[in-house]
Length: 292
Image (cartoon, rainbow, N blue to C red; front, side, top):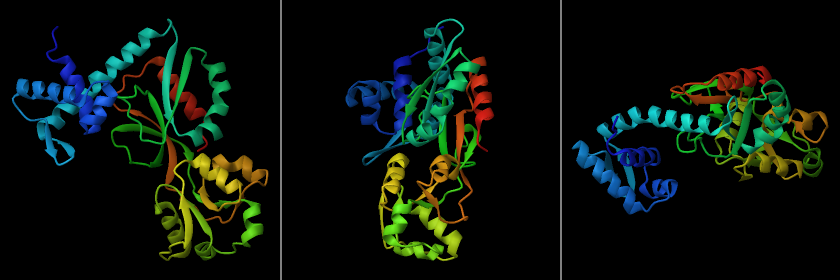
C-alpha cells in the first residue's frame, strides 16, 4: 500500500494542532520554511487550501478541518504501535501527563501498589501545567483539572473531587488576625492561579456578592502556591482531599465549609484510542484508588 505525501501529512497534522508554523517547526525539528513548503505541496496535491493565514495566526479551512479530523486517529495508532513494539514482550509503557501538584501529593504515593498489582506496566510520568497534547507528546493518559464536559473529544473518569475552599497557615492568622466570615477575605492577601476566576466564583458563592480582593498575587503552579501558604504569605483555594495530611497535622487551616464542588481531577484519554489490555488494567487500577 502506498500512502502519498506521508511526510506532508505528518507536517500538516502537527501544524493543525499548533496553528502556528514556527511552533510546528520546533516540534518537528525543521525550519518554518520547510513546514510551509510541505503544506504547499499537500495543498497543490489536494487542489484546495488547508489553512487561512490571518495576520500572525492560522485557521483551518473547512477542508483542512476535515483532513485533520480524519488523520488524528491513524497517527495516534501509529505512535501506539511503535511504542508497544519497543517494549519487551509482555510489558507495556504508559505515558501519563499530569500536574506536579497532583503527582507529588497523591499519584506517586500510589506507585508501589501499581507495581505490585501490575508488574507488566511501566509508567512514565510527564509533568506539565499545559493542556495535554496526546498526539504530539505521545501521551496515553492524562490527569486533567476542570469540569465535567470540558473535554468532549476525550473519555474522562472523575478521580479526585476539587471542592475548592480557602486555606491558610496558622502563622498567617497570627500575623494578620482571624478570618471570621467570607467577606473578611476582601482585606486579606489572596493567592490566585493564572487569573482571578476561581476566587471570584468562590466569593460570589459564599457572599452572594461580586467582590474583588484588594491584595493578592498570581502563581501558576499549585505546589508553589501551597509553599507560599505554608510560609504565611496568603490564602489560597485548595483541594481538601489532596491537602488532608497538612490539614490533619495543623500546618494548614481550612477556613470555611463553603466550596466550589464542580471542579475535579479526571483521568482522560482519547476516544479513538484502541486500548491494550495493560491500558485497560491501568484505567481499572486508577478507578480503584480514586478519592471520589
